[in-house]
Amino acid sequence: MEQQYSKIMVAVDGSQEAELAFKKAVNVAKRNQAELVLAHVIDTRAFQTVSSFDNVLAEQATDMAKQTLSDYEKDARAAGVTEVSQVIEYGAPKLTIATQIPEKYDVDLIMLGATGLNAVERLFIGSVSEYVIRNASCDVLIVRTDLNNQLPTEKD
Image 1 (cartoon, one colour):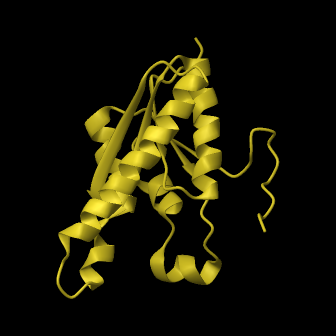
Image 2 (image 1 turned 180 degrees about the vertical axis):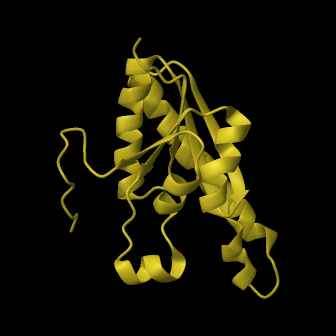
């Protein structure tokens, strides 16, 4: 019997790495006739550095996330994915992507873009993808290449 995924989550944040993961997730969702869950996590820790929490910042982040997810959904549907849902969560991206969203939405495959952090940055802040690999209870696919399985070139 062939392995088939029914609900594929791709974490998107507008980065080039997330774009690569999204494109591959669309193809995997089509091949598996699976639902594609577009997930974006707003890191609330970023707001803690503001001396007085400003709801306007959170609202702006939410509005930007909604627009980003809507654009991704439109692209996924245009590519032939029939079931697409959007998820915006708030909190620590590592934990939210690794466990909370997959459990809440019954995800059986998580697709993520590879991190752009260097070794020193990973040491201090850690990689979301590394955390997800270690803690997710479902399959995880880290995307490093484009649809032609080529490493992306740096954009000038």
